[in-house]
Image (tube, rainbow, N blue to C red; front, top):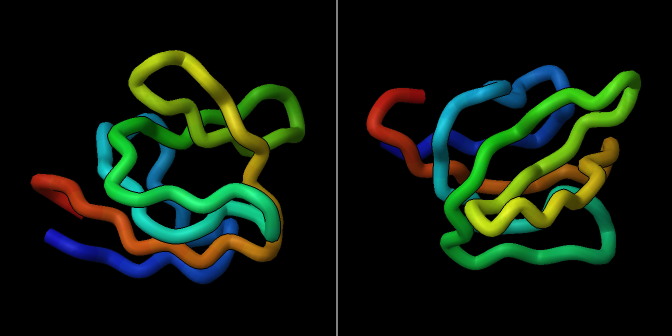
Length: 68
């Protein structure tokens, strides 16, 4: 399934997914497996290697999952 995420309120937390697009103005993804997690007040995208990137209000991604 494919789902477009255009705001922080639409993020599916703690679900395995594949991201394509950007989670802020700096970092772009192309079919990167990972999941969104919360760390205190921060929202992070954590890829399958454990690298985390902070998501902000400029999120614009398409996610691919078995279930959205």
